[in-house]
Image (cartoon, rainbow, N blue to C red):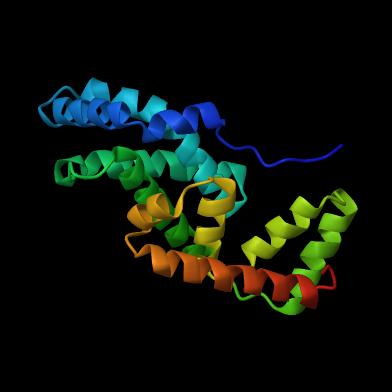
Length: 195
């Protein structure tokens, strides 16, 4: 049976990017700031799937992704008063999710050598011969900034412009990081004998 990585359906992604959704989100944020805290539930329900998916892609651990998704929404709520209305809530919450995930990775990070990578690849061979499993292991071995752009581009299917807003870096830098990330992935796959 072919394993696939769960993602937020495209029909839901589209609504995140519509300008009407931005106005609606801004109205809800204003209401929450004015004291109607129950309205925050609307934003949670609207974006929790996308935030969970991003955390899961970054961490590759379901339980950690669930916990971090909750942390992301708590952090966003605590800092809602500082939200800048020139941005979309979607971009802002994604930035918080990325930073929270990267912080979690740094906290739990250990240095892995090529033998550790080969071991993970062998384990993957036994569980699933699918190329996506090998790619996921290679993505997990990337530097944080490379892993982030790969996930946002290929798993979350964001445009360069959306990635630029979320990561707060120029599109040219996004393209450069993506190029470097692909080269690094190729090198990892070659060193592990998969490429």
